[in-house]
Amino acid sequence: MLSLTGAEAILIDPRTVRGGDLHVADGAIVEEPQPAAESIDVTGCVVTAGLVNAHHHLLQSAFRTLPGTRSVPMAEWLPAMAAAYSTAVVDPELASVAARVGVAEGLLSGVTTVADHHLTWPSGTDTVGIAQATADAARDLGARLAFVRGAARDDPDEAATSAEAIAQALPLGAGGVSADGMLQLAVGPAGVHSDGEATFRLLGEVAARHGLRRRTQASEQVDVAIALERFGRRPLDLLEEWGWLAPDVTIAHLCGVTDHEIGRLAASGVTATHAPGCDVMMGWGVAPVAALRDAGIVVGLGTSGGGSNDAGHLLADARLAMQVSGLLGPALAAQDVLGMATEGSALGLGRPELGNLRPGAAADLCVWDVSGVADAGVADPVGGLLWASPGRRPKYVIVAGRVVVRDSMLVGADEHDLVAAMRARIGR
Image 1 (tube, rainbow, N blue to C red):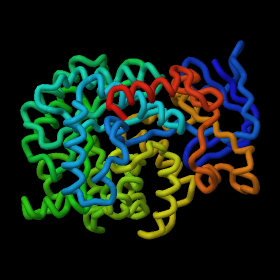
Image 2 (image 1 turned 90 degrees about the vertical axis):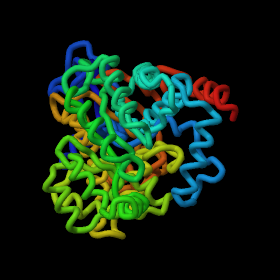
Image 3 (image 1 turned 120 degrees about the vertical axis):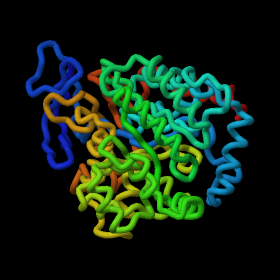
């Protein structure tokens, strides 16, 4: 049980801000203080719901700023990354090392839930072991994980068999979520640029059997070009034909969608994930976020992985999303973008209990100290989280009512040990 007292501002949800106190009991937000609760003084701080990184590739935390991967076409980026994976050998140990670094980086930047779209599955590898190692890494550090059994040019039957084995091995309940809400499983091919109809349909069948969410990527420039070249059609045409425009599907990127396609997406009930830190660097453009939101599409926010976006700092990418939004329509307000990084991302995971601080919601929250020089002169402390010093660390991070970052330091691990383990595993 916890009571946070004296906050300068509390972002209850994307529409509601108030000051004062916030109370936690049994892993949830409650209206009244509880007897014998630990009291944390948050004077001079802004409190938000824990950020939800709706699109990440945790494995790529071990492969940042590699030669041949910066500002190059996708046709050059893919073989450069593949060569690095081959040299390092992707196995459960590497998955664990990379996930621990990526999850820790997320927690230290306010991310309490991360969706890990794992796409690299060498033939013959222990796929259940990779999934379990990633889940264990998140659990040990105290973060929530949505693990996505992805596919990228995998054999369709092997991908589906692996997804089925993972679904049976992990401790999941209804909707592919564990009883304590700390682990979730989803499935999703990388996109029509890498996977065909068989992969989409077979993974969709696994999702239907186990009630899993589905996630994919679409309408980056490369995705549109390859779909037109191979199939003579646009990506969303194929996704609709293959049964992947539906309310249980979340689509990342969407930089190259037309006004007509936005209408189709809205009618289908899909949710979207904006990933500007990847899209801008890769030269894919900027998703028309304002138009997507105006059409009624729920939009979340993700960082993508270290191969294309070398930081898993969702707050910094929220700032970038805000800054570039005016290039394609009305500029987004900081509070709206914070809503994308919290409630928008959570809804895309089918998790309405996350991403807000209303009574009954999961007690996932971040305490941001805004009393320092970087925030001096800021009139709007909530907006200032993005406009001023977006690289900040939160003072406290709480997940399911448990403090996992205290005084801007991890509680469950020494970050220097995590770095040393990665250096030992990959040799740099």
